[in-house]
Amino acid sequence: MSEIVLNLMKIKDSLSKSCTLVAVSKTKPIKDIEQAYNSGHRDFGENKVQELAEKAGYLPKDIRWHFIGHLQRNKVKYIIPFIHLIHGVDSLRLLNEINKRAKNENKIIHCLLQVHIAEEDTKFGFNKPELLDMIQQDNFKELENVQINGLMGMATYTADQDQIRREFKSLRRLFEELRASDNKLKMKTLSMGMSGDYLAALEEGSNMIRIGSAIFGERN
Ligand SMILES: *Cc1c(COP(=O)(O)O)cnc(C)c1O
Image (cartoon, rainbow, N blue to C red; front, side, top):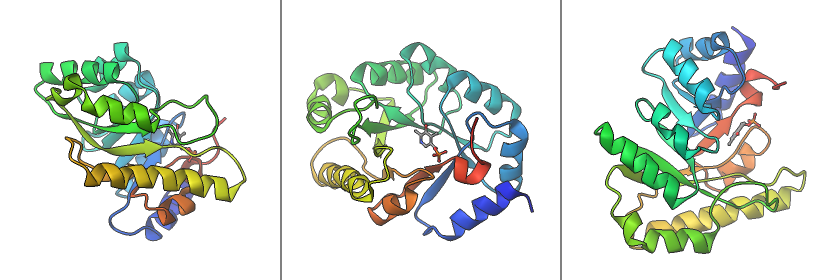
């Protein structure tokens, strides 16, 4: 068995059935993805539109592609025909564009709202007041071709485990709060955890982890 498949199996075995493992294949060649695919894996994540569209064109159509990067509005149209889930939605303008393109194709596109939980201010995403404000807006309520299925967040890149925990906890708390309140969001997916911090994320309630280097090896 290849290294990639062994890594994948090891991580999958440690997960509960209700947790989805997104294998993040960005920068990795088609043949690496095929190895994982041939072992039965179907959920893959990419963060660049062009790379994703090229790979999706080559690879089997039953792959569930996750877009995990920062999505620019002018590129939305390229992924709408095949995307399974867009993780990084961080503005109402982007949602409007996704809605428009989805409508053209007669589709409902599933999205996660990205929440800024890290200390670094370079990361994208809503803060809590912004998110709460957006979901109250009529424009948001009127979107018919997007379905918000949950939240996505990235913790600070740090060795401080307590800080990582705190950040994941804050996302979990917001997730539960939104789930309990009256709105048009379907809070079922909580996407948090990467190679370096997914064990902490799982303990804090994640049900979707996005793992790249721990499966495919370090990226250049
Ligand atoms: C690259 C990336 C990952 C995977 O990172 P690893 O540390 O290689 O597991 C997860 N989420 C996002 C948003 C990414 O860009």
